Length: 245
Image (cartoon, rainbow, N blue to C red; front, side, top):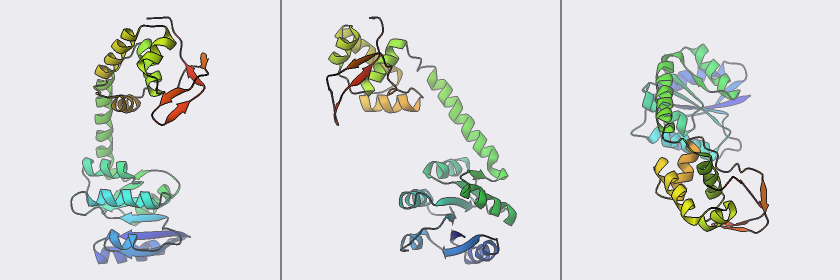
């Protein structure tokens, strides 16, 4: 029996949903409330399997609620049930951890399908918001395509990025690759410029988002000496080897 919790500000909608969902075989409405705070006050032995959540909350409070639910109960699925259908709200909800998104104009049969879909580990969106989802996806794709034009790395730059990610200092990289310290510094400056980064943390973060896997090191040479890193040391470390620049 799957436990459902309903968070809905309108009592008539909340009670109606409770009655209708409870008639479905395998579902029980275990909890209902007008505000999320009541949900967090419960001492759950086992949390609900699905939380049906209204997004009609002031400012970005609904997004914070989604994050808090996922933080407390990672296995709990969240189905947004709302009137808000803007691209911004939909994308923000999924980024925060929502598993499904449907509008209040939906039918009962579609609501049940949505609940069953997210319980099966799938994402679900109602047909009415598909244009917004596609539009948001295409915007991201266009942005990534435009950015990638500036992220074309040479083999040497990719190699250095991997070694920087592994915690190597400029001098250690120069010695390992048999290139000058100045050459390493030049490549490093080029990487910073290409990724519009001003420090190593930003460089690695942006590179990872761009799809550059800096931690997948080539397996050519084993270095037995530990390499100093901010969180300790690593040994042995596998390095890439290429002809000197």
